[in-house]
Length: 288
Ligand code: SF4
Ligand code: SF4
Image (cartoon, rainbow, N blue to C red):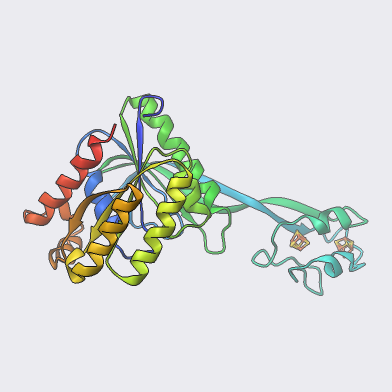
């Protein structure tokens, strides 16, 4: 619990383990919460939660150079120095190649280089089927996805405080890179969704290690556990050895794609799958 609300992050070592399937379901269960789609490179929570945008903001991620041709005397110094080959023979800067390092800006003898903010994405505050939601889209080639995650997390936290909602639910990015670290920093509780495959088992180890580093309380959900019961058992034994709770196991289900094509979350179905997901959510909320 942090400033009157709790942050729960749902992650997986890689994409395709059912992380968003679960998060979209949790988002539709009580209690009152603010939802964050922190997978800013490939957001997909909106497909199920259907947010209606209330606020839209530009995201500035780094700088990009531009050459003022009125001041430039074509001396070529900038072109020689640019390690990214971003400056053409007629002294135009390619925004895609420019890394915004500012070397040309400082080296130009005629102050002909201008450094501008680079619009790298857009972020939103919306009303969704799961309540207030912050989400974003990083443009192709856009940088600083970790910073963008921090921006939308901070807005969600502000909102949790303003509304008095007790929970911020974060759908994290896959992997263990910079955006995941930005999603995990300061979060007290992390649910790792995995599957009983060699890759799933390997990635689980890496994510649990990262979450432990951040001193988060880690829980695990094994999706499609029945496709390989032996490996599921190995994962459970490994978790026990690490002091990590396995809060649920979800069987393989053809119901999931059938429900999702209707734009619904699995928890909105009437089968046993919905019951499994509710049970996992309740166990997660039992944590102090
Ligand atoms: S260093 Fe400055 S003056 Fe020289 S080519 Fe580059 S922009 Fe033009
Ligand atoms: S800012 Fe850096 S990367 Fe961009 S054009 Fe100048 S030297 Fe090249």
